[in-house]
Amino acid sequence: MNTQTLSLSFNSHLAATMSSLLYLIFAGGALYIFLVISMTLLAHETENIAKNIDILEGELSELEHSYIALSEKIDMKLAYEMGFREDLRESVHIFRSNSATALLDRGEGF
Image (cartoon, rainbow, N blue to C red; front, side, top):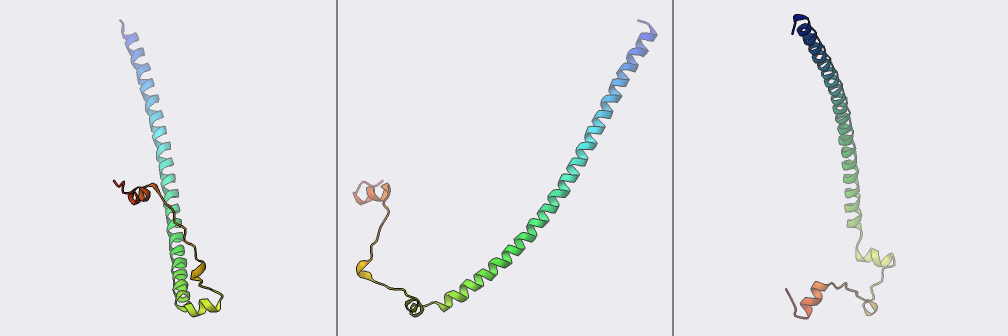
């Protein structure tokens, strides 16, 4: 093996190593830019969601206040005035049975 063959082999390995290194640097830079942009967008979206939660909590508080105010106004007298009738003679009760209560009723419990 002569000196010219060694130097040619070394130069081709150096060129391949340098091009691989440049590709890795480019891919790392692209990945870094992508991650920074996606983190920025997620931070902005999180901020918007937090604002929406604050708005909804305010609306919920107003609705709860209205519900409490209305529930204090309603009594049986108002219900009868609005047309409520309580007729116990015609009331029908329907119960949903499931297998567990049926077994317990027959004494075949667990």
